[in-house]
Length: 427
Image (cartoon, rainbow, N blue to C red):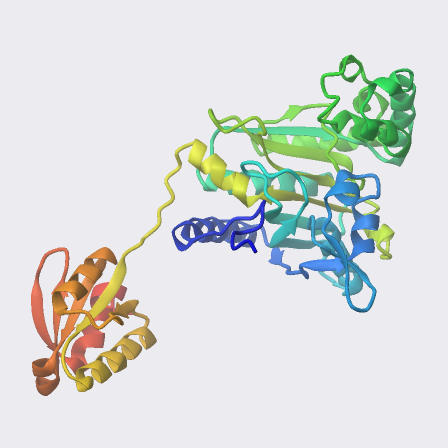
């Protein structure tokens, strides 16, 4: 029996969790300014949600999903991505009827994909994502990209590259699809087995293949940009114009297709160009998915969103040497020695301090006073409160400021007022 974490999973220990919390709080602040609301969906869904929402021909559905049958014989799948789950919730809870449209949502969620674990890509991964449902305005595409770029910039990243493309509307995609089939068909036997299947199921995804990316036909493959109809061209031009107005630099890459079936029109990725980040540079990716809501049983509803890997975000911060300001100090540490009456008073005092908004801890190991002071040092306590038999008798406490060494004796009934003034500015 193995007592280690399963392959592709990691424990996030307290020293690292503080970094996650810092990043999450920064992201929540950005989402609040952009007026996006949080949604939380189940960690597993009926398998059909992902088969219909993500696409049967995708690697996620065919190779990477953790699917199981419950005791009722229902096929369930651990969530491999966020868009299908959010879209299902949008349909089931009739959010399309909300008078405030479009519906702007964000989420923090754990995803599960069975793939070869590597740095920044785990089998249990953590993701921040955004979905906007109910608007086909190209300004929304630009806003979603702006939100993602704002998150990275406010966290301190500078070595970023935004790549965009248009996959066009259905007419444009159908024309491009046929051109891809005509282009690759003569070389079908030279392609990997997955691409041979993709050529009939979804030829656009041949361009996204990691195994065949160096095949000569990839360089000469028809560009989707050459098959955009006038409406799709105009849409893409508007997205680019809005990004330019926002002073957001971007590169148009006609080979950017993304790996999921539901994308159309705008597709984008944000990459790290930091030295030493690694070969896989993508930090976030997303795009427009008009038609997905209808596939899940809802009314015609345009949508756009992105997913941002948290593990890769932290890797990028490390690669750019961005210092995360984590305060590990403790407001107060109570040092108590003596009888059970001292212990009782220490317990009461700790509770009262916490109730009044002061961060406090105490010794629970029965250690001597010297060892308790050492513990206060390790916790980087700003103040130490000393309670003993004499203090209990006099109804006072000794307050020591650790940085200066200054000590003073305070009546117990004045302690909250004094500490509040020192630590909370009297609040």
